[in-house]
Image 1 (cartoon, rainbow, N blue to C red):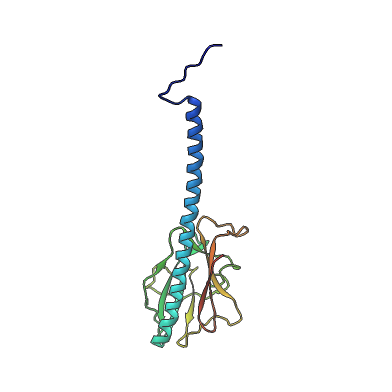
Image 2: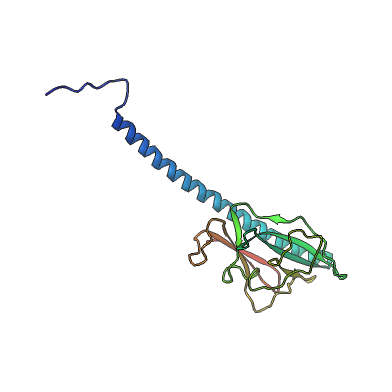
Length: 195
C-alpha cells in the first residue's frame, strides 16, 4: 500500500473546508445574538424614554399648574409609532412645545395594535391643527395631564403603550421581547413591565 505524504507545513483541503464551515456557523450565531442584543437594548431604552417623558409631563403639569399634552407620532409606514412630544395646553388654545420631540431608538417602535397599545389605538383623541408641529398628521394621538397630576383618560380604561423591536411586526405572533409602559389615569403615575 502506498504511503501518503503528509506535509507538516499546511492543512489538507478537507481540514480547511471543515474549519471554514465551523467559522461560518459561529459568525451566523454571533450576528443573530448581536441583533437580539441591539433590539433588546433599543426596547429597554425606548421604554425608559417613554416612561421618563410621561413622568416629566405629569411633574410639569403639577408644578406649572397647567395642562400638558402628550402627543404620539406615527412612524413613516404608519403601522407603529416612533416618537412623542410634550406640549403645553394653554387656556388660549395654543400648544407650544414644552420639550423637543423624543424619537425612539431606530430598532424600537411603539406597537400600534389595540391589545398592546391602547394610548395610540383605543384613545382616538387627536390634537387640534397646529402649524408649529411639523410631525402632526391624521394618525397622531394625544392625551393630557391635568394640574392635579391626573389625566383626561377614561378612568375605567387600561392605558398603555408597548415598545417592541421594529423587525417584529406580526401582531398575530407577538414577540417575547417587549416592554410595556402603563399609566394610571387617576394618578398619572406610570409603571414599566418587562418580561
